[in-house]
Image (cartoon, rainbow, N blue to C red; front, side, top):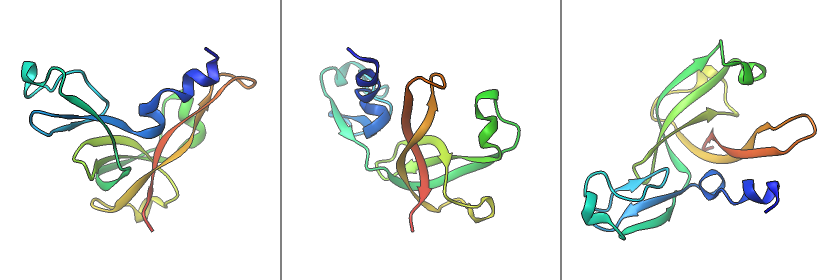
Length: 133
């Protein structure tokens, strides 16, 4: 399998694939093999579910002193988003000024460049969040 194809086929990264427990109805992202609540009763009942990509900001922070790989982005905003399906996801918030961010604001996931393996290597993508306008 080629390296670009390998990255493309990580469905959780590009499509927001989670699972829903067929026993209790809880949704999980990233996917898991069994429901932590139902345990054995969920075996074979975890159904794939595509997360809508829409939700609201639960919490946020502005990062001024990031890890070395993210220095070129500083300052940037990290958010915890409660998706419409009930799961919480963490990610960058883009296309917004820091003073415009507030808890409860509606956001949507968008596919963006996350990084490169090397200057001549593979570019990989993933989700970030942006305000719904």
